[in-house]
Amino acid sequence: MEEEHRTRLAEAFDVPLDAVDEALAGLREAAVQEYLAMVLGDHVPHGMRDLREYRLQLLIRTVFDGHVPTDAVVAKVFHLTRTQSRALIADTLAAYRLELSDIVARTVREALSTAKPDASGESLVITADGDVASAINELLYSLDPELPPVRRRPHTVGQYLIKPAAHARLTRHYQSAYP
Image (cartoon, rainbow, N blue to C red; front, side, top):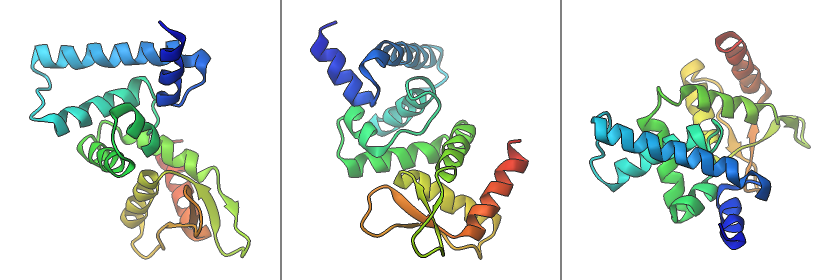
């Protein structure tokens, strides 16, 4: 494979150049799974949107090592705008809610582990993608609708403010649900 292609793949999958072969192995696995599901009739897409959602959930499992990718990465891989990629991620997480629940939980736990006090001391700052923040808010609502939601930190792209009580409740939830 040409070096230019390797460089472009590394950029698209947001991996170091020396990890491109691993990403390609994951891509091959996803392609084989997609075709097997089609041939065996286990998953017959009903349109391009359904096919993209199916492909993204396969890529989450294989190429992205069981993590929800950022909207920027999905935009590059699927050649979409950032807005379209956010919608694709949200639709995929909804369509494959049960199949991806462990992956979403892992991604949320990783975001929660980035928590650091903000300057005011009233909130914690976490680093997350918008879809992960939405998943956190959905979980907060299901655990206790009176807890405050995470909110985007002003003047940042990927940082969110979470109240200590909400962070503590989520931490307890994950300690009991995923020991």
